[in-house]
Image 1 (cartoon, rainbow, N blue to C red):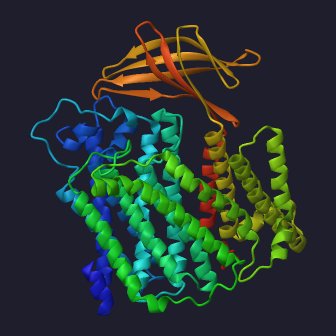
Image 2: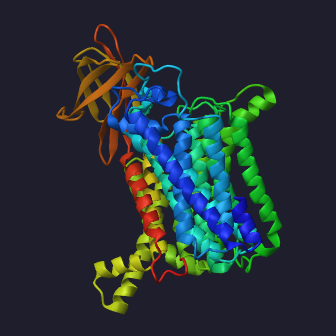
Image 3: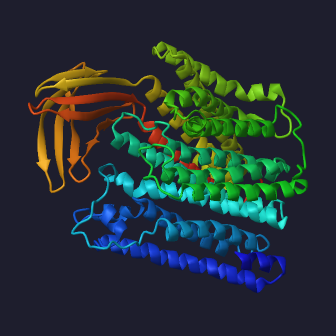
Length: 632
């Protein structure tokens, strides 16, 4: 770090090169460290405390690989290693283009890297040796023995740490005084990468919660869930906001604030995961380094904020907001809504700490608070997605907006009528679905107009014209695909939130229960004993409740792990585009009676489909086409 700064200040390029090489060397060393820990896990080297605590001889290969991030020490190594890989990529890709920023980028990344390495060296060493060699390890916590363990934690932690790179570019721009659009061009791609990976982590975590935790849902506003959502929300605001800076030279200070906040919240997420200050089913055990971690977060955000204040005279906007009815105003409102959701989530997440410090009582904020506060804000964001693309830059007229809204708004009103005819009469649900239809209508209209224009201009077929339209301006149409994905997610959330059915039943063999359009018959259970656990499987036949025709067979499981003395349920799931039948085995008594909790969750499948479409749209937007020099 000092070499990079001194090299920049004293015009000593050889020192900057030395700092770059040092950062690349750290990448090699951390790669060796990660490979070494994996080797120790795969070879059952139980003299290493971490290996003994998170692996065992009977653990399958995929879980042995995942054991690297199962505990605090290994997850810190993962964070440091992935950051070093991102750092190497950023330095090598931008060495020539952003040469003036590079010393400060290197120094910023090096500080963050040094923090994680120091935490491993002094408080959470994954290579600590035991004074004896246990015959076997404890293995993974039973809740972690799922396929999601292999992909969700590394994706989520990678999302957290990836915000370091756009943050480093922002600090580099502030420190060097090069605050034009050059740093925006470079940081945009890294911000979208961080946004994509963080979003992937959220999606995978929701799928894990839905299929493994057994409470019938995919999101519970858990503190660690919230800690991943907050940087994603702020990062989404940043990705939208830099379009205004690029095109109109506005919101320069705001964009700096957003990227600093995204980094700070991502570091807060890693802190909440392992500090133990908040109870969560996701977090690691409490550790002794919480004050150091919090000090690092406050220090890094404080230094970057001081740099921002120092450079305020150089960050004046080149233009002003000319009209409240303009695309700039719509983007700004979009930003404010995202920040409002992030702040409400931040306050609700940290309120237990504040209440305990002030009143001596830890008051937990539950899901109803988040739903009541954030629900209307998310609804506003969906509506804005439909209106914003139709508003002109600088100043739009109400008549122009009205003309462009006629078809999408008409489709939304027809949708409302159809919902009422189908007895879907909950006001919030009807409004939400109508807004989703409005968004789809606007996107379809924009695509149709663009494709028709290109077809007339280049005499292309409709499919070819559409494909080349999308490819020619990937940021814009990738953004539209993201919006379509969000619409599907919103429909899934509305359906499962407002129209979920649930029941509990205790059945003897041959007993039946009804829920919605389903009739379920309990066919009996079987037990399977292994060296470490007892697995009980209950089989049910699912019938169409109207015709009593069998349509499926489900097997719900409940296991007891003797090493951890912890019961774990594996949900039986029948998923269709319209609804999920979700069966949880709660208990089986000595007489063979089984207790079940059953849910019917409408439209949940579209949450996962929509999430994948969001990610695909983000990937498309990551690589601009040649005709997309000016976004949107």
